[in-house]
Length: 206
Image (cartoon, rainbow, N blue to C red; front, side, top):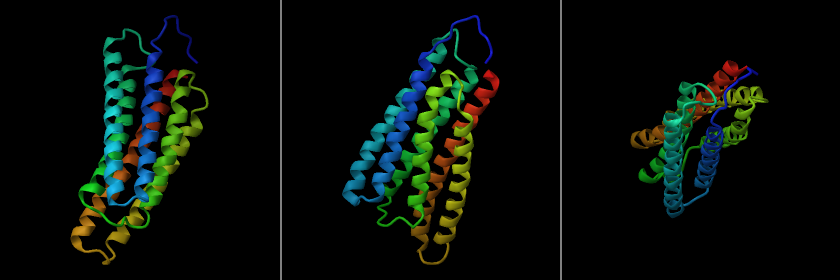
């Protein structure tokens, strides 16, 4: 660890942890969506929207702190990238839930539950990793595992696309379902972006 003579703003760590905890909340709402009926899905969408707004507030708080801090715990660009990527995850999860409700999807294709399980695991790992930014210790396994999960998500996504294009769904349903599974895949990609940013920070701080 590089020795520093100047104090650094520590509230960023707490804000990153809060943002990641909110993502865990979002992933749990995605899990709830799987077993819900249409009325239950609408209620879940409202709760997800509230969580997404909380995520936006957390991101804006980080940006405000960044703009008003003379000394930061690590590079400003990395703080911005990490906050933005965490926000992207929540945005994609909220979008997926909203699309299910707006499109009045009755049955999600087999494999979506695997997508969501991957996202839930990535959310847990991300929330567990954020407090370690204070010390930069024990983070290697985190970004390796998230990258592995993203590769798994890619495979699930490709299988889902193959299912959607096998001729069993009508064209309109394919368009609806493809947009949903694509957004869930984007959420998995965003988790990887967070992990890659954490790796970049750790390398710079080592």
